[in-house]
Length: 337
Image (cartoon, rainbow, N blue to C red; front, side, top):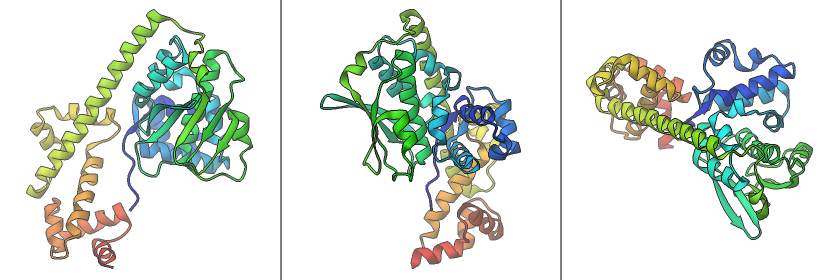
């Protein structure tokens, strides 16, 4: 069973993909689908989308355009509007070194696919892309690392800056776009995805530097990070409450809101802001517990269904097949084999 990516992405960042597709004459409805496209267009840029939807969207866009280098091209057309307050805080820094510090601390405001970490490698600085999820899609690495280079060149005024890059995914058939964009050595199938630049690049001044504005924007970024963490905590509390109350029967949003001492609308809103919703969390908890219970060969399937809050076995069988593509019986037989 493939792990489900967790976390969210800023909708403004997602809109960068849609803006690119529309600008180059592609049908964004064909990529996003009617329902998701309507949701994205109706949402504010600071709202969040579940990370798994973002990965699906990128992969569909690559398929529709038949362009495996699409994330690299999208990165070249990113604007501060797509990045949000993170970009404005970064572009008012004093030096590129300070930008890296902002990236390490606040990149989650853009997406929660990875952490960034600066390491020293001899006379070079290595900015590492460290995944937060299992089996990260190559498109996520392409877009992030390319956007780092685009930002550094744009806001130091040094458009010629070359960079060496390592990617963990295998080499594509054609690497010419990588060579053009990064300008240095590009290696694939490496242990860590990272961007290398000479150490002296970190001292390059930022063209839009403004200490007073930077302090104000940094305060906004910190507030947004705090709000994001609070939303994460709400989702964790809901998962815990679901786990505790499942075996007692049907679990509803209203019941959990009462347990958490929140109004149902407030709870629903906080979950949506965190890129999830009650039904999704209920399914995730049920699936995780089902796999644990099914590993016990002595537990009857009907008992598993009751422990997960189902009144009978039939709806559990249907739900488990929707989650995993196989019935509980098939899953248990596969475990035994």
